[in-house]
Amino acid sequence: MRRLVALFVIALLGAGVYGLSGSSSGITVNNTSLSGAAFRTELSAISHDNTLQCFITALDPTNYAPGAGGYSIKAAGAAAWANLRVEGLAIDQYVTGVLKYHPTASELARATTSLEGEMTQQASANHLPCPGTSAAALAAMPTEMRSAEVEAQATSLYLVSKLKKAVPLTTASMQRYYAAHTSNYDTLCISIALVLPADVSAFGKSQSAGLSVVALAKKYSQDASAKNGGTYGCYAPSSTAYAGVRADATSALDTFPATPQIISYNNATYALYVAVTKRTITPFAKAAALVLSDLRTLNASSANTVKNTLLFAAAVHVDPAFGRWGLNTTGPTVFAPATPTKGDVTGPKKLSASGSSTYK
Image (cartoon, rainbow, N blue to C red; front, side, top):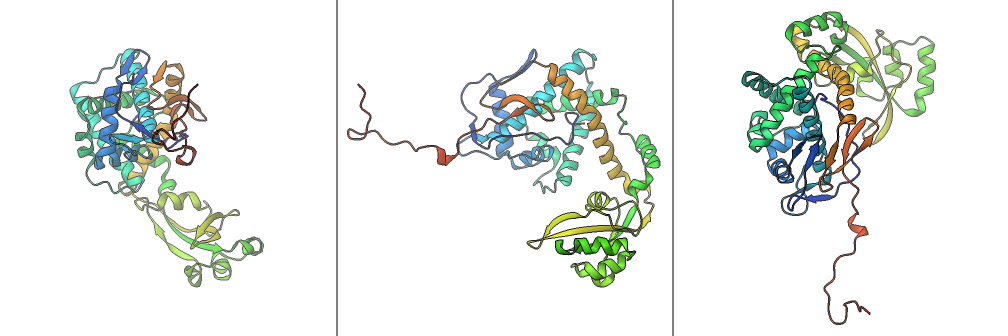
């Protein structure tokens, strides 16, 4: 998996602009360094190539757009990419130095395919219509950057394979996991009730009194589906809305949850109740994509502990031009240092005989 963690949160404190020119020491993790010049070249490629920027954003949704100055990038983007590079260097050092693993040419080829697939999957999950392919994004990377990313993918995959709690991302393992969790991938037919906040108490009392899902929807729901008793549709694991439906619905059939989800809809606030009215077993072939996504998340959870252990033990230096190494609630990370807003900065004035300062 890319950097072990497919989904993680980076706490970023500022959105200033950082230039890519000038000298800097770049990034150092233990005894391995990435020069400032090489790192600036990577930032420039990310911020100025739309395809590459889109797929990097898919891996970590952050603003990687160019900054206000020429050949510059937003501070949040610089810090986020620095964080990914620090993680990659730490993992690569551990796997090659301690586990003595050095990927072969064929393993690097598989890692390339894996990285392309993960970038494509994350772009789809984040609803990013990238202008090109993930293969084109890799091709747009500077040579050193591309080599580092592919090797980091290979060493990350190897480390995940060694974790006791990790599930191999093979078809056989996916099928075994699916067989043990079949109900998690049922096709779900649902009914909903979109209830005004003022009616939530009455809705709860009516439900306790035994009103059915159909009766509750017809009586209280503000959605157009109310006239049909709240019937809303059926969702298979291949549906983009499936994950949300699965999270919002209760396990019991024909029962609205006791606690609704509060949502904003058409500039108004509502309580949303979702009830499953029918479950149908989905064949593995149709659920495979979601099974793979769930296993990646499961492995990422196990791997996150290992990643943080490596980062806590690592000696890390990040040039202040790119970010600030520190600790947040999820572990060590690179922060974008806070920068003053435009309103806090007085514009420069030309010096003149009448306006210049007098020094005594």
